[in-house]
Image (tube, rainbow, N blue to C red; front, side):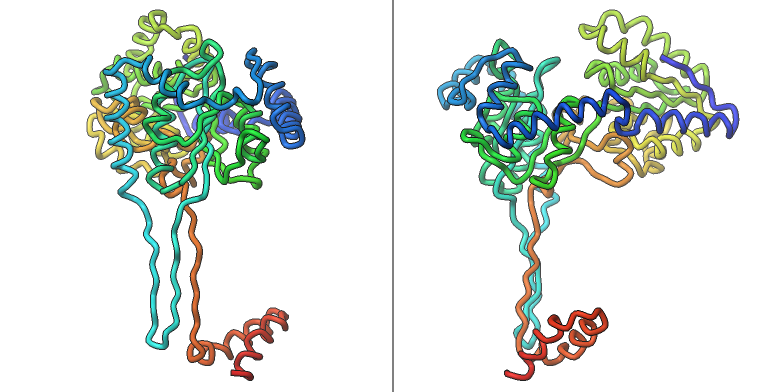
Length: 436
């Protein structure tokens, strides 16, 4: 991991410049080429439907599937679930209950205000008609992501929830992923993935229905596809690689800090893992643990590349500067492991999720605490939020005016419409006032 010591304001400015470059959406020639490749896939699925999905599934996943085999049957789902041991199913169930309980707490309700003249204004809140949940495969399998996407959609009341996942486990979806989908309440499950699955959910094919919203993480190709279909459907976000920032001081257990860096680095080679310490001694202690324990990781190859290429040990000049830097970076995950973690956390305003104290590893948020692990990345925590049940709902304004209220406010409406030069707007009020 690279070490960066902030010695003065010039060094701080240079660090921020480098961090901004890391967090910027891909504008490299490789990223541009990838976007054009994905555009071709999306357009082919839009125009050719199932045939294109089958072609790209064989090309990219190495699995030949006829369209009638895209969807898992009820028998296949039950068989997959039977292959998951009971203890794991129980753990998934407990996690699901915590997630459901958390997301039930922040739902808006419909409301109406009725006036004495009989007029009514209000909002009617309800679910989107359908949602598509993307669950990645390949380098790892993510039953936790199944729960984090489907459970909030269920809490929101979405009637149709379609899950897609690539056939990357012996030509099929991992049994744990299928079991989680059934438990959480997916209505249909398809063994297709990649940009082709995103396009199918956006536009629909002969076999795969179009949905109103697509959520769930994926690789760079999946993210690019979500960006391209936005507008035809809504998406949760254009998520980047995993991120963690650990705030540490002399009181920090170096092994605890190192494990947080490992936990994100093992996701993929592009994960951003940062530690901001109060002294060179603290940074050195964590660096020593990383060097000693990294080789023992099962995914050491992936983690070591992430730490070597994007990992950084930053030494701040003060605790206040460390907090300011964390707010500037706005990380997906922020692990606060300082002497007074609650006081430190009070200074944080930009982070997807804040894990406070030494006994709160990021993994508790990833799996079981209840808050969603679908979080803003690439500094988007400055203006966006984790996935919630509200993301699967929409609001319709409701207005019913009485003649009395229209007469009371009509002149103002006419005046404002004429101010904007919209004569027909004004006329729509005048004719009612003249003829009633």
